Length: 169
Image (cartoon, rainbow, N blue to C red):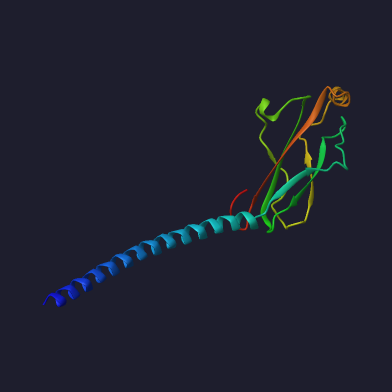
């Protein structure tokens, strides 16, 4: 009968509409899942940045470098961990050169950096004092040029360390 045929067609239409709605819902669910995975990955990277160790080097202004022709130049400095987790396997290297005022490290190739400190762990908020040591002794003429501001002592201090996430910084 016509009424039965119409009812069957309506049931089929309702079934197809249900299938399409379910399919669209599945697509949105998959898209939502992809967004959650990407968000978790970004969150993990942000957490690594938030919780890692951040080290700062400051040349100690309270202890000026002793510039004489009797001994190598010693430049005291402090390293402080401003991060939230310890810095592991901390190593420092230093270069000291005497050059004219206005000289820059990019003006010439720096010599090979020399290992200065032992490997250590630096906890948050704990400053460590150290000394950059020149591998040369100044001549009396060089000392006089520094005192009269014709030349200057430049120091480059490099720190390498690992974060708790085993990343080198």
